[in-house]
Length: 263
Image (cartoon, rainbow, N blue to C red; front, side, top):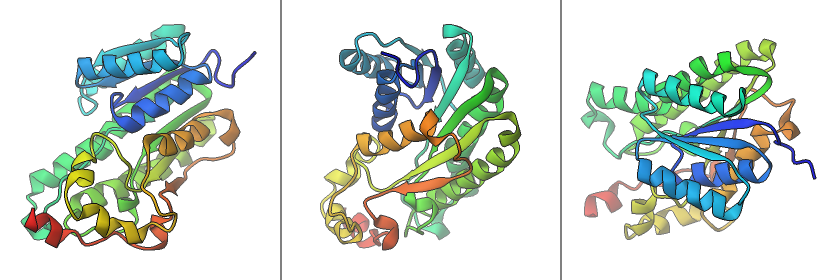
């Protein structure tokens, strides 16, 4: 039986993260060959093993590298392209930021979060697009923090807002080449990166009233949106950043300053 992504090749940056692994698994299940890039080889190998356990016929390569380093990104994109002589899908998941009051931020901390969330995606797009043919898809991972201000998380809010501007700017120009660029904007989702938030007393209690659907996200919730934006089902969708957040954007982000200071 023909699968929707048979013959296609995808690269996933930040490839050992929870959302990245779940997204890669769905891409593999629908036929795509994969290259997972991340900084920790052992973590990438665990993700590869998880994917192959679920999809035994999957082709999954791994390559250690830093998504904010241009040469590492170029090497990973080249390795992905060499799997089958083509590159069809880029999933850029690298991102993150720490809690700190706005007036305590240093310029270098803002630059760091910008590089981590924006430059990493820019490099994947800038060097990946020349390897792609019309019909290619780029999917970025944003955050509800791009739209909803978050007390003590201003640097991350600024960086994710810039990422969504990158999505719109790239989509407008790359549409002429038949390449689509979109983003998923997750709400609070359980993963290695958000583990401390799930483990810190009081944090989930503060978040809970802000989710109309009454639960927090799991990686597969986000992965299903990534799979949609990467595949042929979304062939007339570009320049979009949409929330998969249990309804969080209907409300607000909580002020966690008292909880964090108490911790």
